[in-house]
Length: 421
Image 1 (spheres, rainbow, N blue to C red):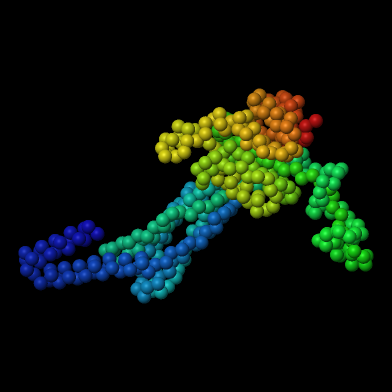
Image 2 (cartoon, rainbow, N blue to C red):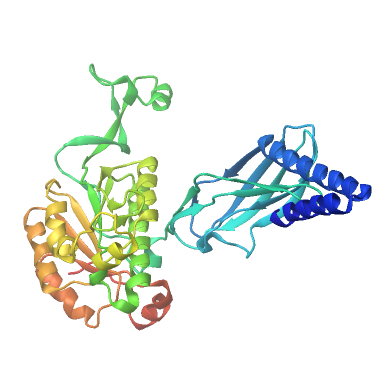
């Protein structure tokens, strides 16, 4: 645009010096086109409606479609538009996310960008940028989205055998000889109706068949809450397993939570990880049951990250809040405070890359408080049988959740682990 402005100034000077009519004519034509083009472009952007449709949630390995809608409300056509989307590498299916197109008067068009969720995370998509111009290339105008949208990619959810874990892990609701309360999901038969029975418990089909009112009987049960404890202390992971091991730990946590919810169990989540959306340590999620509660857990597991070291966090952003030090998030120091409100009889599923002497005794003290504690290692230790025996002596069943790449080799060398004796 600056070159064209200087060209107009040069034509004006030549017209004044040479006093040639054709130069004045050329100046008028070029100048008129320039002014008209700038006005046309500004008007086109004001008359342009831009919107997008994109699912904000997906599972790892799932394809996504983003549809960008463009509507020209003006009676003037828009000769060309350049639409460019900013897509992070973790969601890219191809190299380029831009397209050039034209838009007629009072018309609407749309373009589809295909994305692919390569791994779990909380990713910004955008800001969307649209550039409009005239036929001659004399003027351009740009519209840009103020803030990007975010896509939450949930971690993978795998069956327990694919984690290298037995499907009969000892957690969840247990049977009780005393009737603490009746679990309506566990039908144990029917009995005759008596005064005071709830109408909701009448078995109408059986009553119609027997021609008398029959009431459902339920199995008595004690609902023991289960809390998944996810250790995301970066110092606990070996350097070469820091990324892969922590991602595998998150997959194990998501799979265990899903397994519990499918069994109609109450499950919660405790983690010493960092929530990038809140820019703060992740808040605990109390134990509840239900599909919607599971999605709340999966959303946090999609965003959660390892804690960054203090120096790295301050180097990236001097205004960022000071992250906790290692002593604050080490499992042996953090878990007793985080689990102080857990009730007697609750189950803790502790997912961690390593168990040292201090951590084992910490878990043992929780066990002595009346909690059922199971530990699951996500990084293979060099002497697992000896460590497992030591943990069992302290009342802590210990399991391995073998990485998918090692599971086949591990299965050939020994049978799947059962419950410790």
